[in-house]
Image (cartoon, rainbow, N blue to C red):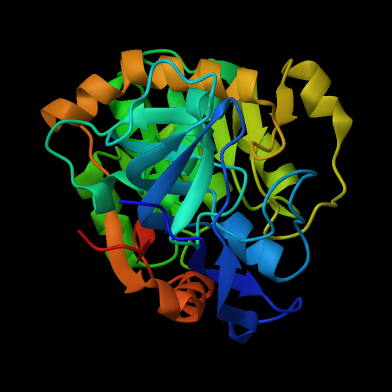
Length: 334
């Protein structure tokens, strides 16, 4: 069956609130030599999509201006250099944009097979969060078995993924979350202890939980005023990885504890990294994480799904922070 020349997609009409997301018609893209065209079954909704909508996170050069960084679906066209994928394959993919559409281009190296037992909707929740957590917690921060990890925002898509992966590799996990229900659900996912950041100070709580030692690794998406507080929570030789700045990019810190405790403060963004970097993460996930998904030891946590035309409602939910886990757009329901 020939590919339609046009497709439904969500565009950002101007920087602003969720109401600027508009359903439109776009030309169906054509794959370059190293790309595949995917008929999108579902797309994940992520904080970077919200930032892009607000005009704070523009698409990198060459990327689609359509939001959406992770998809699942069926390969329907191949670039001329593709050898390891076939038309009809079901895959999920990390993409640089274009996910909120009926058809999306993906680098073949950033595509992964659907883990056994998971649906296409479930699999759309994997790429952005699993690539992010693996590259930051296990590669950059070098989390080891028996070490302690503090995750800020344990109820988010990143948080629910990080809890499960860290526990699967035998780390001890502490998380912050915004209410008692979210804390309880994080415990059910495997967290060793939770901190309701509205009810208690996470610095005091972490020092109590670790007998004043502090934690070995912190995964933080808050930034701003959290940075000096994070430093107080860090053990000797601890590593902090910054992956977002919801409280802003600036703060004042005391450098002396960093020197005395030999701390490492690092961070990264994923979208602008080249395909070789992302392809390496994909291989690590396929070897180390996909078997855990296939056996059910870890799983994507999905809060709710919306139709493509209801993308604005999905963004409103994300910004309300009332969700636990991932928010998904069903684009071409199967």
